Image (tube, rainbow, N blue to C red; front, side, top):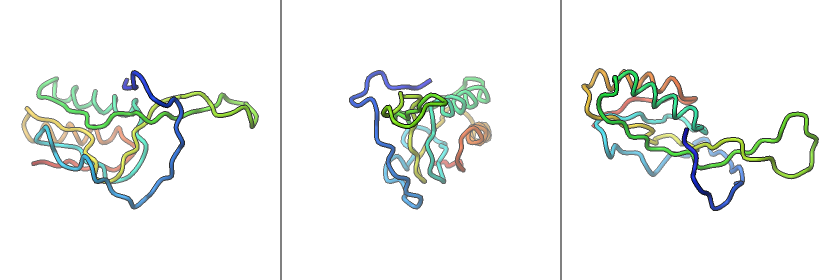
Length: 136
């Protein structure tokens, strides 16, 4: 799964969600002919990215090329169960990528249109947000 090799700050602030804010970066297809675009905002963790990637490669029978346009670099901390208040912030549990509407998550090229669209549609089912398949 995807995790950063090295980080400048081990623990981050949570940040505030902005529901209606749209993405300004990573909103156009740069590498492939077909892409999976986010329509909602959420945190996507490395397990969900890996599940989507495996779905795409399995459905295309390892044909074509797949680009993952997101990388989980935001640490999420968690305290152990049954721990009382105090004692500081918990240890890093997993990493996420905060997605806003409009972001391209995956791109694919080298396979025919029907196969690419179906693979991306299935990959979208592994994610906690609504997505759509776009093409050049």
